[in-house]
Amino acid sequence: MKDNERLNRTIKEIASKYNIETGESEFCKFTKIKYVRYVTGNRHVFKISDYLVKAPDDVLEAYVETMITNIFRKNKYYPSKVMDWLLSDEFLISCRPIRLQRSKNISGNTVGKARDLGESLDRLMDMGLVEESDLDGAYYTWTSRPNYRKVGECDILFRTVTISCALDSEKVPEKVLDYVVYHETVHLRRGYRPGEAAHGRKFKELENLYPDGKWCNDFISRNLRKK
Image (cartoon, rainbow, N blue to C red; front, side, top):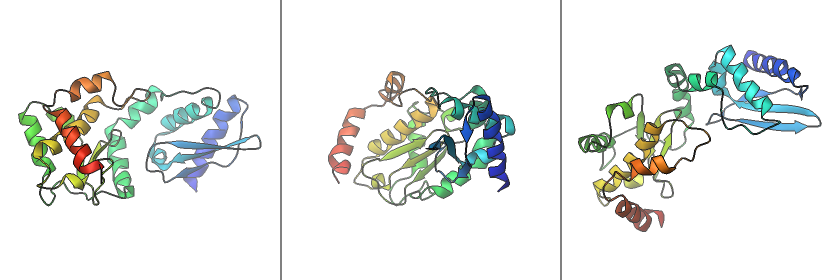
């Protein structure tokens, strides 16, 4: 209750500067950092990721100001104060455990039945494709159930890489697994870039450094995604 009181106090103070009426907003248990706005009559109500409960007052105020001003114009960028907090060790340490707890399909293990994600990263480092700095604060895990549509996923803010256990098989060549792990690690290297295409030109330049990447993609399409 106190958290929502703090949130509504902040929203009302900032909304008043723009002559905007607000209703009772609340923190919600979203998996991602986001907010949703509803309009009832002339009142604006917000539901905001409860990760922001842990934000200092000045960060919460900057985030709320972004929400309010987005009523008038689209803004894909958080102010630097918010970005600095989202990319800080403080955010990662306090919020990633919550993010992992809410994830419905992670095993929490790097060692699978046939393949080891740690060994995959070692091979990529031996190839000179992955550096120690890429892995700083990173969390790698297999899924608990196979995902054939999305064989790898990276949550950049939470520095979490999830690899589908569909790749945890001796029938899948090591270089295919390594390609997927490398692809997701490139996302970590590129970092959080709101407003920029996830697979833009610079990303593709790095991804194309992986040998036989096209063959690996074709293998995944032929043998996994068709399932």
